[in-house]
Amino acid sequence: MSTGIVWFRQDLRLADNPALRAACKECSEVICLFIDDPLAQTVSQLGEASRVWLHHSLDALDLELKKRGNQLHLMQGDSAQVLKQLINESGAERLYWNRCYDPQTIERDKRIKVQFATLQPSTFNAMLIFEPWQNIKADGTPYRVYTPFWRAAESLLNSSLDYLITSTAPRQIAPLSRSRQSKLKGLKSLDELALLPERDWHQTMMSHWKVGESAASRQLGRFIKNYVTRYDSARDQPASNGTSRLSASLHFGEISPRQILSRLLKKHSLSELESGELVFAKEIIWREFAYSLLFHFPHTIDQPLDRRFIRFPWAKNTDAPLRAWQLGQTGVPIVDAGMRELYATGWMHNRVRMIVASYLIKNLLIPWQMGEQWFRHTLVDADLASNVMGWQWSAGSGADAAPFFRVFNPVLQGEKFDKQGSYVRQWVPEIASVPDKFIHKPWELSTSERSQLDYPEPLVDLKVSRVRALEAFATIKGTN
Image 1: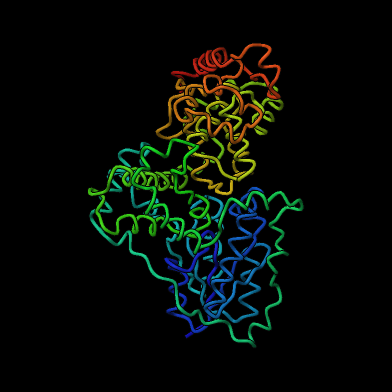
Image 2: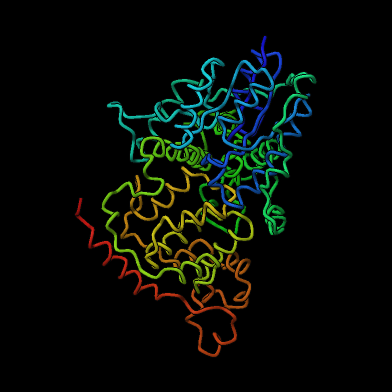
């Protein structure tokens, strides 16, 4: 038996963690490691909200490890240099990790595999149900449309139960001996990683959340028991408690998609699921689709998949309208409600994400990359694959995207999905007294009534800006 390092990344859990399971089986001592690598996309490009979540998630993981006789070793610096130091100091002979799929991390991991080949690095899939190269077309090319991707995924799931096999958390995880532990010099405390911002705004944000593996498991249980059967009808209503709210836990790997689908399918096959359950299952596979696109088209992180959009005539002098959008001061209630919810909680309802994205891109003609960057900075669930796909979908430049000429009307969206204005009144309290008829279009109130509101006039006329967007799209339509 030997000493092994388990390198935690976006897999901050003990159950259904194949790297940890393999190390516990093959090694007599296990070093559980997390590296805060300034050069790694998975850490350095985390926004402030995500770094706050990471702080609490690492704390929760350490507590779970201590219950099993181990601890989380925190180190900071270039991953290869940190691993080299830890291997030299601990005498570790094996190295384990679960794979990530963003292009920068893939290349880094390839280099580390070569550099530490003598340790026989063992890597596993813990982030996805299917590897990005498993669910592809018969000709070996990736899907660019979701419906056939879903059908292929459904076929794979029906053909083998192996895709949904999960493992329980180890009861004990043998720690490094005291003599070897005393030789480790580069360890950091959680506070020394400085993941939390200097200002204490994050305390209010985190009051909306429970973080860690146990909390994620409980949240999934509540959702399946109380909400999933009506997910198909409730998921688009931002004022209701109709979504799973597991996106951040999925991103940081506090829970896996395998665990979610295996619990959803505990009593029924895919074909036997109720409509709400099936729609939720499709959303889990939608995330798989996002990772497939990221893996096969890595340039789409900041470049349009549809190359026509490279020449799109975006607006000039966007600083002021972009800032108004970020702060929830556009004068469009459903847009402002979403942006304020994001700022306060680090999260935004998915229907509202689509509305605010369409408004930024099509009504303000601001490049989707600016919206994606703001979401990455402010979301606790800022998942690169899902975030990029969502923004490219809204822009009409991505795979299976909404066509650019589909411009969401935020007033109609609000009236349809927030009929009573409950969501808007929660996040835009300065117009809470406005009658339902005008809650999504307060600019139609009389001049005297509007003067009583401490709320801005709309940045742009929705009809005029829609026409402007369509005219802009016409300049690239049909080009290659």
